[in-house]
Length: 278
Image (cartoon, rainbow, N blue to C red; front, side, top):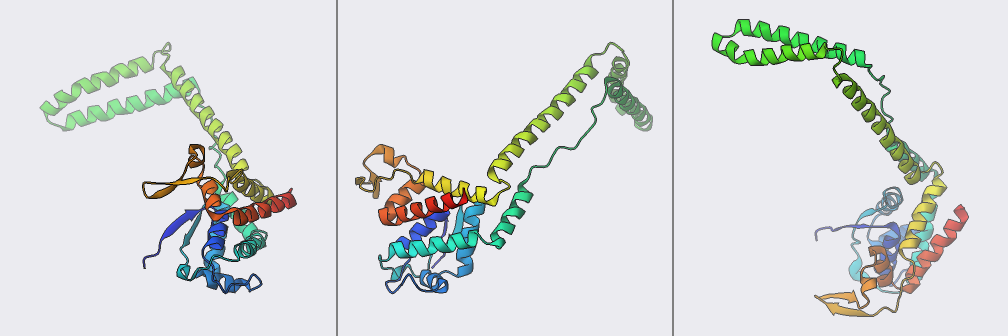
């Protein structure tokens, strides 16, 4: 069977695994290796999924191979074990190093410090470039046929007029160029400072603050789930009767489908963990 890819937040994986990918013979006191065997995925794949969930916000994983052996019992026990494993890994030096590497690589690059040109410098450069263009054009016109040289004459005249304008001390074009360069430099600095603020928010120096942000995001997304909400069959799919519920985010709906026991177990775990980080 072709493997399917699913993108889900970490807590949703815990809920889905605890709600569905579970052997009837599972016992909550089994070793961590047995959990992954029961789920039909390797511990490395599960750990990589946890890492990706916290670092990137979404999880990539392959569906459990043993779904056909599912028995819907011991949901709370396996949810607690998976959450405990998640906390243990996220609190490890290995994850801290991975976070620090990601934080460093995501830091915005400061714009190169470039000295703004004066009006006189801009004028001198434009005059020099135009004089060279005229010289090159005159050389070319001597080397080509008379017809081609004649066709290039208007271009040469335009360049000579430009040179005359550039040498005019009252020409305001150079002040406009200088102002444009100044605005561009200021805009680059402004965007850099904005990106730095966003970077500091998304990747705080304290890893505990980073983890707390992820936990709070999960709690906010699953707040106020009505586990008794009525459903109706529509277009071969179950939908909420209440349109406000139908408009809820994916995490809220996943929490509803997993059920109160599993979702509230995950929320209670996240709240306790969040309290420890503050």
